[in-house]
Length: 383
Ligand code: FAD
Image (cartoon, rainbow, N blue to C red; front, side):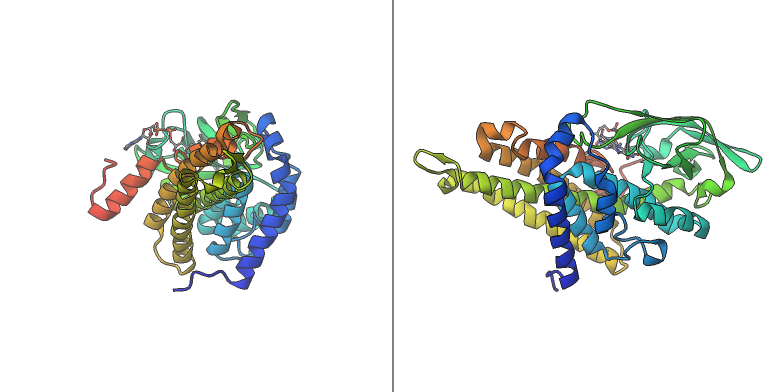
């Protein structure tokens, strides 16, 4: 067992960190306060390779391994989770769905654009009445000659107002997961509207939107995979998406650790650095432990993917542990900072607000436990 990074992986980490420390960290508070990152950073991030990391070279990506991907997502999470979300939805959820389920034409059309971020994608699964229970979604697509006509609504969609293409899941058949089909919908198609949702607790630099589809007409060639395969496509893509979320959470824990250590070793109370107090070290030790534990779960999952082995349960465990750890670490880092932890001049309060959603999206912590519980017992608690 070798848990060390290769020279290539290490140099990608160095490159990513140097870039983000210069281009993102100095601006993240301003982006968070005004509720939008500066989108000029997107092409620069694409140049570093964040968007194309695991997209094969033949489709304009770097064809990298998933451990490198995890490292990239960790660095993005350490810098600003809003940026991590833009990448992991656009080239992750949308790009991977196309890569693994698209036709050659769909891959040729979309992957080079997603890998270079000349186009952004969004992933439209959740609806007002179906979140965890996504298999019962109610958006509808009806066949009309050579076209499909889609009607419905999607809620809390990352990149919604910025995306050029929306991967939309809609019902083409009967009730339940088997009636769901996926479609690639260019967002300039008449009848497609995205409205931004303001006032989020965290991830404020990221566009989260409500999508409205009113008689949106797409050709049959816009169907991704086969009719009735949409739910399967969504679930298999979300397994890899969970690796990205978990990796981003490791970055949050790492950022909390660095911030807590820096503050504790410079702040003096009672005539000594607070880092010398045992109860402060107790908090720092807990954050450090969570950083290692979460990272090991993430790397194990990434390694399973790289070796072509089943990784779904490992992804659920990594996402569950890392997202809960990120919330714990941010809370502890605030405590180490005292009152300074409560203002956004210091990183922990933003880390906490950003971390909170990681236990909710791409399957809540409860849903991850049901997936792990099903694997352990052989009994599904979903039905
Ligand atoms: P619900 O499913 O209503 O859950 C409410 C509570 O009930 C939770 O605690 C949940 O764990 C619990 N619960 C539900 N079912 C069970 C069960 N069987 N057993 C035990 N407990 C259960 N969606 C997309 O499609 N694309 C995106 O890009 C996207 N981005 C998002 C960005 C943000 C900032 C947010 C907040 C959400 C985003 N989502 C996105 C939606 C997200 O995936 C859902 O919010 C999430 O899946 C939970 O669904 P819900 O909000 O409807 O909660």
